[in-house]
Amino acid sequence: MPELIPQEALWPGNFWLHLLVFTVIIITFILLTVMFFIWFERRLLGRIQVRLGPNRAGPFGLLQPLADVIKVLTKEDIVPARGDKPVFWLAPIVAFVPVLMMFAVIPFQDGALLVDLNIGILYIVAVSSMASIGIFMAGWSSNNKYSLIGAMRDVAQLVSYEIPLALSILGVVLIAGSLSLTEIVEAQTVPFILLQPLGFLIFFIGSLAEMNRTPFDLVEADSEIVAGYNIEYSGMKWATFFLMEYAEALTISAIITTLFLGGWRGPLLPPFLWFIIKVVTVFSVIVWVRATIPRLRIDQVMAFTWKFLLPLALINLLITSLQVVFWPEAPVWLIVFAGLFIMIALILIWSKFFKLGGDRIDV
Amino acid sequence: MGLEIAFWILAVVAITAALAVVSLRNIFRAALCLILCFLSIAGIFVVLSADFLAAVQVLINVGAIAILIILAIMLTREVERGSLPNKLQFPVIASTVLFLCIAVFAVIRTPWQVSDLPPVEPTTAELANKLFGEGGFILPVEISAVLLLATIIGAIVLMREK
Picture 1: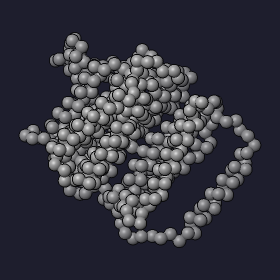
Picture 2: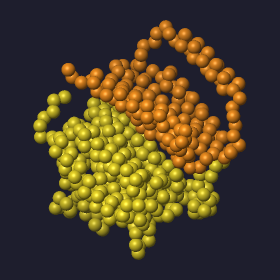
Picture 3: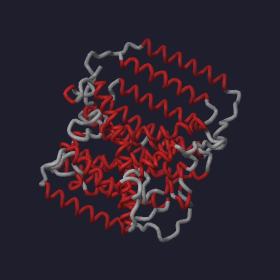
Picture 4: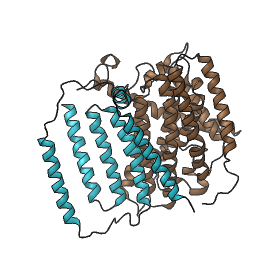
């Protein structure tokens, strides 16, 4: 059997023990952090909208997610009579498992991860593309037109935004010279957000769309299609979808931290703590965006990715590869300023090319 | 030992899923079985320590092609009942069995070159060198890229309103 993991990287003893311990750690971490994120998002949204947010259950309302969990679990489990029942049952699992799987390769600190795959980031891109199948299964099997429309929107959105997302990851991979997440973090003497500002922006917007958060949450736009693909779900199955969405937000925050913010690296504090701090910071920005920007229309979303993000991602990839091939010893400060300048110039030029919204579009 | 067990489980799942694809009447479920088949083939790639190929298999076949297939299914009528049975079943079964026999015979009779070397690790750099390096396949890769571009432009031209 080929060694997938070098022996010294296996922390508690042998392969199976390592697998067991880290799986338990990752699942516990995801569940606890998701509960914290739900509370944190509601409090932060409340703060931004000049209200209090949940504050009754426990100190500062900290026990509110727990109360919500108990409420959801004791609800009646409803299955549509004319739906496709086996698919309806499988859909939440199919949607949730890929999100859980993505966490296998994210390093919490040096060596503290389930498997250090040498194709780490490719693995993440591949696995994340699987989650939309679960969503589509849910939308189809519910036998409900709103859920089907929601699922169709999700698939269209995901297929379109995956391309600029992958292209912006390529910029990071070119600079780091590796697909392994550990090596990408180790290559970041300067956080890649400074070397790849345009790439970071594209990745951030693309991942907002990938996890269906505002302003790209038209998959579950309440005012148009009630709740999107999970209309017919209730009880535990609905909770699994909810868990999936927050776990995805957590995973994306962790990936952004790893790729662009230097992962576990940082002065003074222990690496693990740095990782958590950065993840929570990224998540706060995501919530901030949600509180600030209104929802887009479906044609605006599509036009934005194909006409704006994709060309900019291609140009970013071209510039990065030119720099890596022809001038690898360029001084860091020059790359930082040139990157910022190019980013601002490109965004200004491209915003002149086409306008989003305002005028009606006939389909 | 563990790898062999994994291989047999994946192989059985892949073949069962592939049979389900052609035998299920509900086209949507057939498409889901096709996805399961793709996934188990990716698993077989992992067992053969071709990790890059496995990730690409999941990314392209599961993430993109399967989604396109499902979208295409949404455009067909009678998704749940599928196409009505016709008289071509027996010719199809006969020709499929014949093809299977020929394929198995060819695979068994071919003197495969077996290498004693352990699998290369990591595979990504090796693959890139083989594809784009000296004496590699850079020209076919470029030609296929041009072909894809031509297809995209052709599709746009066909779909444009007059």
